[in-house]
Image 1 (cartoon, helix red, strand yellow):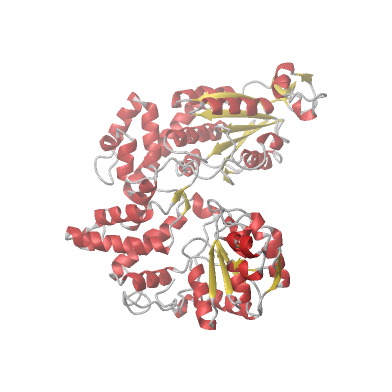
Image 2: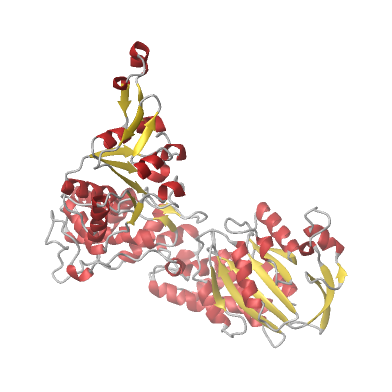
Length: 615
């Protein structure tokens, strides 16, 4: 994006590649999220080379006839299928006129329409029924733009098309370049521009957001903020609430909350604002030696500073950044918990006596509040809550921890030895005769050496009481370990994270501190979770390898969980805060794993459930 059609900010390398591709008679697809300058880049290169651009908006309504052209029905009735009765579509217009055909939103165009382009891209010609073969002029090129495949409403582009085009991937520009763009468009105050760009860039990295805002959001935010400040007679320094109103209006419709996360866009924006502009501080300062945006002031939009270098592109959001705990502002905490004001009457304050009273009256409400306090935006409150959570959740987990009793016992197993357990086999049997080996459950006498892996689901709406239940369960499993019981702890969503590797000791308090930072995001890949557990259990020296899965078992990604049970002797399921659908799914999976399902509707259910599973 730029104020000058002949100059593009922050896309020098991409501009060079596109220019050379066109000069060497290549067709190109520009791929990147909205607002990264795809259209601006093309127009800039076209203006520099003097090429005409024929623009086509790609959507599901773009038929082959609309792209290629068609005969005028009334003219055909009057004079027949004559060439002069044919109206060229944008494809033929570009082919005959030595122009650039720009197809926007390539991966939203129907496949039958894209197939029309195959011969054009390969041979430079197209056969039109009754019109004949139309050959492209020497200057014809196809330039397409598209969002990444996982954007809403997109589909994969077929290999036949992809194989005939070069691909240039655009990411968001560095922060300095985005500030230059916003300043060039809005001519706004430097600090307002810096605030807007930081807020917008934070939306792209937030773990609860599937899609963040483009630089267009920063432009709108600056204009709304500037107008609201003037209307209310305020300065930016005392306009935090005004910035909040402007951010809600400019950004809430541009961001997309991750599936399964029960938060509103406004709540996420409040959290981001609390991080970028804390309540007790002023707006963020402008970085740089002289405090001016790159380019020397409003109205100018040069490229990024020299020290940024050609490789200064922003990192893409990866698994590590998405796992970092989000924070929760006081406003959201007050809406979520009735007792919040009593437990934290002031910023930075945690009243442990008030919390102890709440714990005695309503353990579930107290545990849910403590879990949320552990990710409070207020740093002092967050630190105090994490210290308290380590003590409280470990103590509660200690009451549920049980030592293995006895030397031998009769247990269900998926190994082909022992006596057939008819009831559990019938629960697992798919109905195909003869039953597969994986459908058979036997009973055998097992020794007391067991390896147990707790697998905690962190997808979906993992917050509050769900986090507390997970933390207490982890503490109970870790504390139950002794010479006859070895343990490990994993968490998963659409990836798997090892909190405690098998055979390595970690203090229960440390595992709890990791877990209370969890918040739900991502999809539920049960198959990946069980494979991760198997990797921990297989090397263990044990007579029985057990997985305790804390999940609603409603898989939304990956292969079916039943295909990942090899190497696991028993699978028990703890189903937290279950719905009817979750209970059915959990029972079925536990039966297939030769184990049992225990619903956990409150903190008081967890201790007995752990005792039954670990005892």
